[in-house]
Image (cartoon, rainbow, N blue to C red):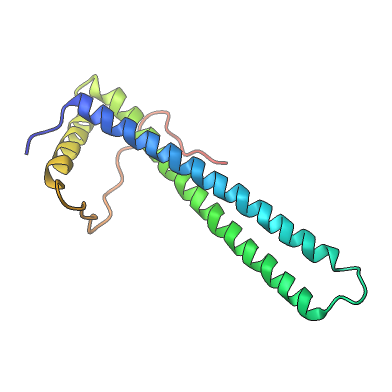
Length: 148
């Protein structure tokens, strides 16, 4: 298998960065939308709290709507966290490649080989997921884990 060229890897990494950024932004929009819906459901529930003559079945329905909206917010929050994590990983890989490509390091060569083998072996069919988790890569300088 022929290894991919450095410009091809840069293009692949730029595409991955753009896709991960777009995915994160879409997930954040969906989270904001679901938070607004949950807020509206909570407001509707609170409006019935002090009123006399409110049917208890209506209160049960409003509580169920609020609980469902809360579950959606939790799911969307998890999706945003996952998208942010993937975007950070794509940034780290792109930065590492740019740093290492200039020095012709083994890491850059491995990335070139990976992209070359992936582009040649997946034409016409879906890529196959790895059967086992890869060993962690070496830690690069100045890449400490980010916290929120």
